[in-house]
Length: 290
Image (cartoon, rainbow, N blue to C red):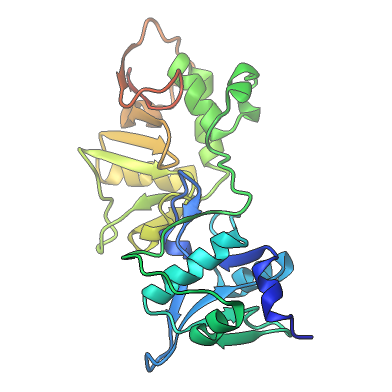
């Protein structure tokens, strides 16, 4: 059954966001705008139910590390988004694509029926909108930090990195290697499948959440042995373990590869480099030298 056009101005609506251009640090993205193959129709999309938008994103393959990229808009926010789309050359607005109650309107007609005036503002971008119910599992809260245990095998990679920042301990390093061996991680490789380093450091990303828009330049690994072989083959001097947005754990490769993990660390040398320091955890870079 077709929904009354005026009701669309009074209910929450959900618009999909480009999955390859998400700001996963701040939790926002850009609404999808699409052109027809002959460029005769340019469309912005909305859905009237959560089930519909979830289904669309699943079919469209836009899920990023368990995040469904879409935003919710309602009332004036919806109208302002349509006005911006109109200025940017959109010709149609589409509701519930691929659903039974799918319907599309020409924007001129929709504006007229809803008594919406096109904006005369000079608009150059559609803007960004918050990702619906977004949270960042890789950013430790103060509560998580306060409740960290000494059972390293039960800690997440962000927790292990934080713990190693505080105390470069052999048990944490063992747990960190074990954690990497149980997840998919990502490295940036050249067209020749050789590791790309930055300042002689190889970055190891333990999530694709923050590199998704550059996914063509990265490849995934699934075992610690594969990483070990790569580090040895190309004589990598240092590695950086990170999610891509928060703290970076910098280690000498020899330390990471060392099988002598049971030695006692006697007053290890390290330097804490602070960049955009915010608190004890975020913005801190620990450069460990063993």
